[in-house]
Image (cartoon, rainbow, N blue to C red; front, side, top):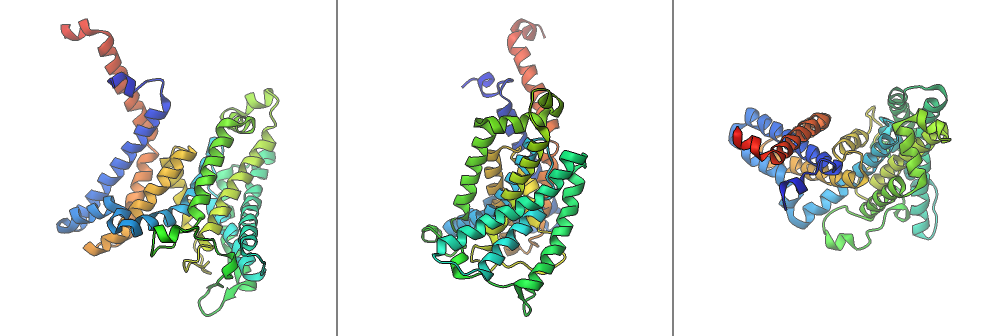
Length: 372
């Protein structure tokens, strides 16, 4: 295939993809530099572990990648969906935590048969809890023009402390300072995935996450409702002139984003993997990981899916770096570097455009090239 067909100036998707790849490469190189400075003799081995990620442990490692990726794909979808509609949802952590608590409360307090109904009710309540928590910044934005970044960050802290209080008052394990274990009927099923990936905590959560990606992709790109949401995000004044109810769409966008984050919380804590909501003054890190995933995935649902898998992949690699006497927190620095470079994707896009444009000019003017 010819060069000009590979890099078509009109193909925004190709250039966006290339900018994300450049961000990842820059972040990994920065990580290698950190390893070389800290422990030069083990740097290459540690870096190899990062790159290999889940593949180091074969099928078991891949299963672990899929398990870790599930909640951050959902929070990434939450942030990315809001961003596509012109909103910056920094409150995914609070929505994630509220959804997780709602699912745990249903799983502990309400014994329901058959089992699939119990799990289904917990998932639905998690979606509703996350959506309800996102409604507040959406309402403030729509009717009072309150910046959603500020209001959603505040809701993260309110949600964290509110959940801590609600856990202590309802589903508290005093010995371990955490939520109680949910009933077996509320746990997500394995659907045979435990046989494909033995020794891991994988379950149908990853299938639900993939289904959510497909659903959001169709909603944004194949429906009138999705077109209206994106139109409001790109130009609210023109949308209002066209008869679109911008206030309603802002609220609906935040409700959907919150529901996705809340579902992510349920998928993590109903996985029967030994994960419990701790009563600690710490905001859920999955929400901020979702911002990373959304940036790397360029807010595209399909891109977010692959970005979530990549972040999970190098996270597993970060755990394996301990074999070379590196602290696993190093991987957080590398992910932060990748995200930082991802924020510079506009610069990368500009450079790629310029490079392609110069190549095209050179191809269109061979005489000038020969003269030079």
